[in-house]
Length: 199
Ligand SMILES: [Zn+2]
Image 1 (tube, rainbow, N blue to C red):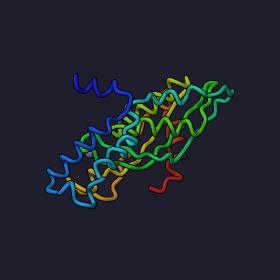
Image 2 (cartoon, rainbow, N blue to C red; image 1 turned 30 degrees about the vertical axis):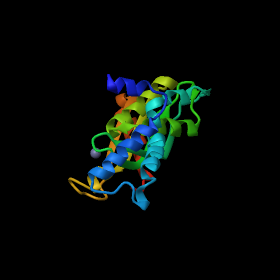
Image 3 (cartoon, protein in one colour; image 1 turned 60 degrees about the horizontal axis):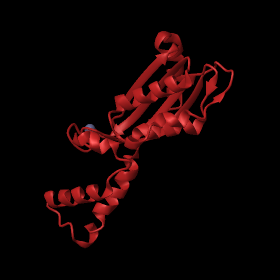
Image 4 (cartoon, helix red, strand yellow; image 1 turned 180 degrees about the vertical axis):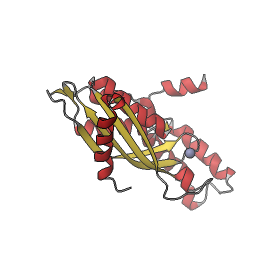
């Protein structure tokens, strides 16, 4: 249907976004042709093209170039930036992701893990789903012994409307493999994650 048609396109339809933004400007009582707004639909379309590029990519591809390394020790990347949009309000949520895994012969480049997070973040998202998608992708693609992902984010749909609780941070986590099975190992890794956290 409409939804599937949109998803099979190769990139964001910027002209369509610009038309829709013009409509929103009228709907909120603005004048879309006044000086300050005349370029706004185009600017929003350009921004959305980048912010929602994740709808058109499979972030697992960033782990294709992972390399063989015989280590079974924890690898933890903390404070990867997260900038995404909640799918309920289309308002941004921002924060950081922490990705820890125990490899089983295959190790990913640090920046590749950041790209996986970004690829899933550049979509309409739920923080819970984003967290699980990163965990499942790293676990599945690297064949790791275990993965733990924690995302901490501030949601503007919470801070700017509705409940209006500025400064509150939502924390989600997903554990796979050894982190799911071994509570002590999970607790040890979570302690490492939160020790350096500033939020
Ligand atoms: Zn929301």
